[in-house]
Amino acid sequence: MPCLACPVSHDLGSSSIPEDTLSTMNPLFLEGQPVADAVLAGLRPRIAALKTAGLTPGLGTLLVGDDPASASYVRRKHAASAALGVASFHRALPQSATQAEVLRAVRELNEDERIHAYLVQHPLPNGLDFAGALSAVDPRKDADGLHPVNLGKLVLQQDGPVPCTPAGIRELLLHYRIQTEGREVVVVGRGPTLGRPLALLLSLKGRGADAAVTVVHSGVPDLSRYTRRADIVVAAVGRPGIVTREMVRPGAAVVSGGISWAGKRLLPDVAEDVAEVAGAITPRLGGVGPTTVAMLLANTVAAAERQQRGG
Image (cartoon, rainbow, N blue to C red):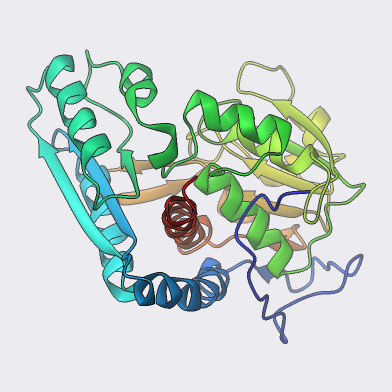
């Protein structure tokens, strides 16, 4: 069966926990950077092999508008690329850009042979069609794994890019030995970039998956009816503090995947006092973010390898 994400070496060390020993006395903080570092370490020899063969992996980004959070996120992606030896290419369009201009930029990125994978940074300014822009991306160059063709490959467990944040959450759970096989996972959120693909990924057969997954959303009355029974709760709504202490069963693992911004302050979907009852929890900063960037680079390297093989 094809691997759904690049193989990595998991450094479990003293930060890992054996299954069934989650404790609410001293919750384990699921720091994302060690996970990202493990993923990147696994990519380095693959990048070196590609360069030896005369191929430097290239990651591109398309940013439309002047959203500060999006601009910051794009800068982080390019900084991570540079540190890893991946070539970076960036296109910026003004807030006033038309849909036709966005699609023209997408075509140019599709045609640029130096770029093996790229993304259209979400969200686009009001009045622009993100789905239309995404559909125009060459599926072979889809760094985010969100093109309809690649989501279809995920359904069929075929080789292809996996959505970055869901893949990063999967790696996070694997790294810290949070068992998913046969466990109940509740995903709060049904969005196409996180909630829906994550639910699919964790329910498939394979390592770090095989879970019994329930998807709920902000329109469901009494969310705690579902979250209180879960072994793992993933918040993926983008609404600050939507998952509260009362909604979490003591000892459960809690991952905050959705974020929002209040000015320059990042606000997670999980309230801070959830740490008082959770057995394991992502920190307010440095949880899922680093793993998302790492999986973006993993998709880029895999795309370069497929091109080298003629795929």
